[in-house]
Each structure stands twice: as C-alpha cells, then as structure tokens.
Length: 583
Image 1 (cartoon, rainbow, N blue to C red):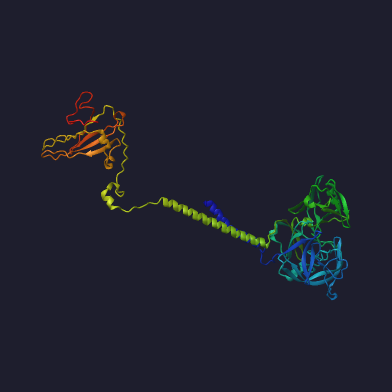
Image 2: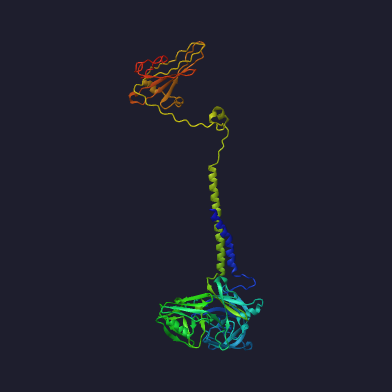
C-alpha cells in the first residue's frame, strides 16, 4: 500500500468514530434538554395529520392544528359530532365552559381535566397528566376518522398559555426556559397515509439543515377568534405562463397544517390567476373561493422568510380531481381579509420549529433533509463498524502479502555458504574458492587450424636432446609407423587422451623411453598425433606426427611431403631422419 493511501485510510479510520458519535449525539446534544419524542403521523382522506391519544385509557384520533392552543374532544352528549368515539364525562368534573372557532369550524363545550397518553413511533406511550380539554357538546370539526383536535398553538388570542399542552409540560418542568417541537410533514397526497413525524419536546436535528430563520409570533387581537397568532412573511413572487408577479412586503401569515390549501387576499389571488391562461373561479365556499386551472399549467410560487426562500411549483400548486384540475391557492371570500394562511402544502416543504413560553414564542423555518430514525442510527453504527473491519482486513492482508513478497526476494538473494573441503583443497588447489588469486583476463579462444592443403602427406616432428657437457648427444628418437589407415581408423580413442587437445588432433599413444647414452640423464618421450584432414581428396587416410620431448629446452619443427623431400627439391633437416608414410 502506498504511503499516501495508508495515511488517508488511517485518517478515515480515526475520523469515522467522530462521525458515528456526531450522528448519535444529534439525538441529545445537551443533557439538560429533553429528548425528542418521535410521534408518527397519518393522513386521512381530508389531508389532515392525525395522532393517536388515549384519554382516560380510551383511544381517540386527534388532528393537529397550530391555530389554537386548546385541545378538543367529542363528548358523549355531542349530537352533531358524528364520531365513533366520545368521552364520557361527569357533570361534576366540569371546570367551565369554552367555545372555539377554527376557520369555518367551531366547537363548544365544557372544560375537563384528564390524563393522556400519546402514542410514539415504537408503540410505547408518552404520558402526561391533568391536561385541560374542551369536551364538545356541539361541533363541525369532527368526522368518523377524527374525534379530537390537538392544539399546538400558544392561545395567543386569549392569553391562556397554561391551558395548552405546551404550558402543561412547562409547568411540570420549571427548570426549562421554554418548550419546543418540530414538524416534518409529508406532502398531503390522497394516495398516501404516511403523514411524516411530529417531534415533540425537541426538534430533531437530523431532519433539517442550518441555518434556521426565526420569526416571532405576533398574538392575534381580541376582535377575532380564528387564529392564535401570526408570523411576518417578508414577501412572495409568482411566475406564471402569462406574467410574473411580485407581492407586497411585510405580510401577516398564519401557519397551520390543519388545512392543505394556501389562502391569499382577493386582490393578490386574482392577480396570480390572471397570470395563468385558462384559469377561472370554480367553487365558492363560505370562507374562500377555489380556481380551476389547466392541468398542464406551469407555475412557481416563492415565499420568502428572511434568508429562506421556499419555492412551490405546479406539482404542489395544481390538484387533479377526476377530469378537472384546481389550484392550491384560494382567495378569501371576504374582501376585508388581508392575512395569508399557509397550510400543509407549505409546511410539508420545510421543517417547522416552534419554541416558546408564556411570555413569547417564535417559529423557526429551515430546509428539510431526510430524518434519521433510531433504527437508521443503529444501521449507521453497524455500517461504520463493518467498514472499519473491512479496512483493517485489507490492511492486514496487504501487510502479509507484502511481507511474503519481500521474504521471497531476500531469500533469492541470500548467500549460500559451503563447508570447507580439505580434500579438494589438497588435491586441486585451483578449484578452492578460499585461496585468493589475482584477476586474470580470460584467454581468447584458439582459432581453428586452416584446412590442410592437398600436398600434405607426411609430418616429422623430432626434438634433438640438448647436448650435455658430460656426455655425447643422444640420437634422435624416431618411431616409424607403417600401417594402413584402416587399422588406425578402427583403433579406439581413450577419452582421457583426446580431451586435452584441439578438435582437429587426437593423441594416439606414448612411445617407450628413448635409449639413454652412458652418463647422460636426458630422456625424451614421443607422442603419436593423428590428424584427420577434412579434405575429400584424403578421405580415409590418417597423418601421424612424431613429437620428441627432451628434458632440455625443446626445438619443434615440422614438414609436410608426399616423399622424403619437399616439392622444391630440398631435403628435410638432419634431425628429421625418416619419413612416416601416409596411407
């Protein structure tokens, strides 16, 4: 493994526990703050977001609303509620009477105090006690699927924060300065029942991206009972196929997922649909008017809150109902209504955070990101540990392979030490590698002898003994060989004799010692050398040399002839006494 790659791998391994710790710490960064309670949400056919709450051990389905801080439940004596479950209350438990108005809906009834259990996403319950509820005896807010309203507002309209769910928890936790929650809603689609998550007591940091744009809630005046509070929207813009519109500045907006639509004042809504060719008013209700639009219309609405711009295109602004398409933006039926209401179509496009107390409250707007549940956190930890194990396995395997490769290379280059061979040292010192010798260049190979000419017939090699001052010269020792070539051709050669001479000569044999003269220590030996000419004119013949080796310095001569004299008529030297005939 390259050094740079090894450094990167080690860096990732060191940084991975930090990532895992960061992911797990998102759930609880400050031990003094409460943990997030994850509440699953469901969508009904009216695109309302529902939670399951047990009241006095009896299950009810509540719809979320942020326009009010009061929570409402259908009572047993409600004849107009049209619900499947009602709360049986005792007249002696009533704490007063309260009426409530939300948009075109209303609820009237007595105030009761009950213990509640909010169902979490793991099936367990989050419990709280002594919650004030309006036990409605008449209301048009309910349906067979909805038997209660969970108010997440601050009751700004009548300044009764203690009666809300938020105030109830804060009164039981006096060390906390405020209470908060987060809404991660899915888009209000009729084909889906998954409404997203309600993050109670603390926003889930894994569900939104920084920065968060905070806007203070403005309490509603006492002249209206429709909403608890407003928030200031900086401006808006609309791009249609016919024109582009820029809205006014500093607008009052209500944020509530109880409805899926977006409501604009009449003049602003009509300007928007004037920029959509083919649009027209379609249905007018008691509170608003809806517009029909071409199903293939292109449009984009951008709502601006400080540094955050939320863009909605035709996928959220156009709804299809059979063969007719309607715009999500509606206009107020009353010309005097100047507020903007942003329902779940807007809320599902952001992450909405509430943080407040009895003195002040704020909304936080942030971009959405995919939430990380507890199971996903465990999966992240498992994947992280698996990655660590896999990387360690690769490092160990690389180390072992590299080590094995280096050992093989070193073993190929290792020096082999041979034991000292005393016998070889004594019998053949030249082959002993432990005896230092000077460097001598290698001799050049001997050239091959030239081919023998046709006149080559007889060779005489004789060496006279060196005269000694104490004796007479010893006569030349000459051996005459007169035999047929066939006899010499058939004679076997001894390998020990033939391996020490060139290829063109072979040792035939040794002569007997030369006779010695009296008083002389000279001695000579003769070698018979047989040559095999390659010429075709001498096929089947052999040539012999007589070599006389005296003890004294050697004189070497030779001649070649087919007779006792050369072709030029000269006679051989006196020490070439006789001719060895060639056959």
